[in-house]
Structures are given as C-alpha cells and as structure tokens.
Image (tube, rainbow, N blue to C red; front, top):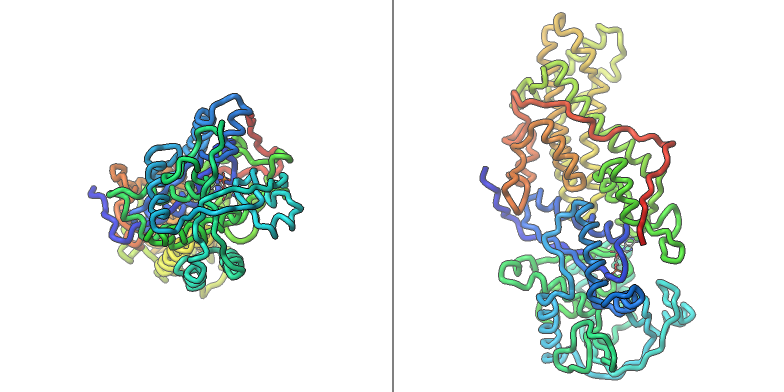
Length: 574
Ligand code: ME8
C-alpha cells in the first residue's frame, strides 16, 4: 500500500515540559493525553504532525530535592525523566520527541536566542527587588504577595524578599502588540475565560521581566549561563520556554513552526500567552497560534496536594487500566477532564458510571451485537456491498422489518420513522473535525458516540433478530436483514475512526476482528492511515466495509463493570 502524503499544513502541538524534582502524576498525564489525542486526530485528518513533550530540569528545586535524596542534580533529573518517559509509554502517547532541557541540543540553541535578544537590546541589565516564590521558581508581584500574606499563592510556602542585579527582558515594549494579537485571536487564548483574564492583566500594564540570576560562589553548576555574562545564569522559566523552538529549529523540522499549539494548565498560561509570544516577536519568529490552558484535576472532591498526600499517581491509573483497560482510562480522562474553565473530579463512582454508559453499554455492546448477528445469520461474512443497495436510506428494508414485527405480534415504535445513515455519519464526521480544530475533544468524542447511539437505536427499532426468524416467509426478508446489518457495520466502522485518537488500542482490536486492515498501513511512520479521514470515512466509499469481508466476533471490547466492586488502588512506591 502506498502511504498517503499529507497535503494539509503541518501541525505542531506541545505540552509544558515538566519539572523533574518529583515523579509524574495524573495532571502531567492529562495534559499530555490531550496533546496525544489532538495529535492522533490531526494525523487522522491527514496533517503532518509534530508532537513534543519533555522535562524541565534546571529548576532550583531539582537541586534541593536531589540533595535531600543523596543524588547529584543530574542523577535525580535522570531518575525522574525516566519516570516521565515510562508513564508516557504506559499511557500509549505518540509524541514525536521528548526533550530534556539538560540536553546540549536545547542548551546551545537557548543560549543563542538569549544572545540575540541581548544584541537587539531586548534584554538589558538592571536592578530588581521582589518577592521570590521558591516553590514555583518565580517572582510574584507586590500586590499578589500582599494578598497572600507573603506566602506562595500556589503552595502557601513563605515568599522571600530578594534584591538582585539582573538582566531584564523588555516585555513592556510589546504591550499594545500583545493586546491586539490576543484580542483579535491572532494568538487564540482558550478557553475564553483565560483570554479575558490575560487581557485584564495586560491592561494593568506590563513591566520588564527578570531573565537571569546572579551566580553565587558555591552554587551548583546547573542551568544555562548567560552567554554574554558568565556571572549570571538564565532564569529557568525563560530557558524552558525556548524548548518549543530549540527542538524544531532544524532544517527538517522548521516547517512545524508555522502555527504552534501550546497546551498547559491555567497555572502557567501567563508565561505562554504573554512572555513567550513577546520573546518570539523580539526574536523575529512567529507567535503561537493557540495557547490552550485547561483547568485542574482534583481527587474525590479535594484539591490534590503534597500535604494531603492525595495525588492521583501513575500506579493508580495503572490499577484502573488493569481493571478496565488503558483505553477506558484514556476515555474517562479525555471526556470528563478539565478541558474547559472548570476543575474536574477524579471520582471512582463517576468513572464506573461513564465506563458503563459510554463504553460497555454503547460502543462495546453495539460492536458485539453487530458482530454476533453477522456471525449468526451470515456465517461471519459481510453479506453485501455498499453501493447504495445495502446502505440506508432503504425504505423497503425498514418496511419489511416492521412487517416482521407485526407478524410476531410485537409493537412497532413509530411506523413513520426513517433512518438516514449516510448524512448522519457525514455530519458527525464534519462536526467532529470542527471540534478537533478547537481542541474540544469531549465534543469530538460525543459526535462519534452519536453514531453508535444511532446504530443502537436503529437495532432496537427494527429488531433484526425478529426479522431473522421469518426469512422463509418474508419475500424480501434476506435482503432487508443484509441491508440492516451492513448499515450497522459500516456506521460502526466510521464511528471507530473518530474514536481512534482517544482509544487507539480498542479500535485497532475492532479493526483486527473485523478485518479492516485496508484502513491502516503499518509501514507508514508518519500516519497509521492509508488516506485522510475525509476519504476513510466516506460511507460506502473505497475504504468501506466490503462484501465478503469476514467479521469475527472477537472478545467483548468492554465488559460491564460492577458499580459496587471496590475501587482499584495502585501501590505507590515513594
Ligand atoms: O510548570 N490538573 O512544570 P510542572 C491538570 N516546568 N493538570 C495539571 C495538574 C492538575 N492537578 N497539575 C499539573 C511547570 N498539571 C514548568 C513548565 S513549560 C515551558 C515549563 C500539568 O511540572 C499542567 O499541564 O509544574 C500544568 O500546566 C503542568 O502540569 C505543570 O507542570
């Protein structure tokens, strides 16, 4: 099979790079999962995707924790970077690269960018006095410090008064440009609530921001030294932001810098929506197209914190994956997560409710009902082609199904009802693509689910099992049954394409059972698909379910969960 060549513009999506002072938890997995689902969805649409994640290693707190644990900063950074990589492999993320900021490829380029900003006068030397939040590696403003009783607004730890001679980035020069870019959505700050918040803050006025720190005697050799002044080190935030560009600043990857999409949680939206675009402008680079800042996961109704010890750890997610499958975990996090402005709660009861409603009773149940009926009535072989003959609208088949119900003395729900699968699927695909562009992945999945629910509704309405008992007596009985089951299978194939970005393993399992290998190409490194979604999802098109295609029942994709069973728990090793 010839791999399809993406013709649409490249798509670059990033996650924050995570601190390596500690191991990963659900929050880190969540942002990276959203990026993964968006990346997979864009590959499915046909775009040439680059998806970057990684670790931010030069923070002071990495040095502090490493010392506490009896490691060098590099050893400790490596231990935790590996934990992030393991967690992301377990979550089945499809990132194209993983950056560690201690790598030369990042450090060298970051220093180069800083030098360029010094040369252009965008970075200058000056005095700085401020409140340092050591737990967050950032200065907070006088107003914020006062409001929080001189404690960190995030962790509650005491703030420290620091006076330093620093290098400063002239953020003030970009105030009106930033306002205009964000107001006009040239830089789209999403969700809307975050955009308003950022604009409100910009309107209060922008000051210069410190970008370096004096190196004192005895300081560990950790971080990037100011390229123009060996007595200063680049402030970790400024260096970290550069990762998005350092890793794509190569001949092969330059094309991805067309319209980057940065994902993160609301805690760090200021850096991404204000400081970073201004730095890029000063460097003569394009600003990001989208800065998407979701809200937080909380656990069983409570904010997650170190002091409460209630972080949802990776082992906890692993225990859920063991019990319900990894894709069920991905589904729950993607569809129930804090993608909008409100926090989301990871509660066991809710997990089971969603699992049973969406997966066991909808997707899993439909797939096995259709597979079972094709096995039972047609020996597991698709009984017709989709050339319109077997695809609805086919009023006569529906009429025959109603007749079978009447013959069996069963009620017909609504005798005037019609079903139109082709437009239903076409609209669901088109709405899902729009939702993917907005990174509204919950909506994209709901559009996929709407096809599955339509199939369920259709099966309940026309009761193929009743019809199947009357094939000898009804003239068009066999034709009607073929038509009905073909429509169900083809609709589920289209739904499964839309479900694939969130549930890559379960959809691949369905495609194996249903012999849909004509959809994918295992040899294409860029995309697993042989054609863009618009072609793959065409009802009855080149990639449709084919006549004589064998469909084996396979295992049930999602077994029903017992709501009263104990919640799985992971054993987290400190
Ligand atoms: O801020 N719910 O790293 P970090 C959802 N190194 N997402 C959460 C979360 C929660 N409860 N907790 C954390 C840093 N996250 C810097 C970033 S980027 C140039 C430098 C996720 O390890 C979310 O994406 O503190 C948040 O923005 C990120 O982890 C913070 O990760």
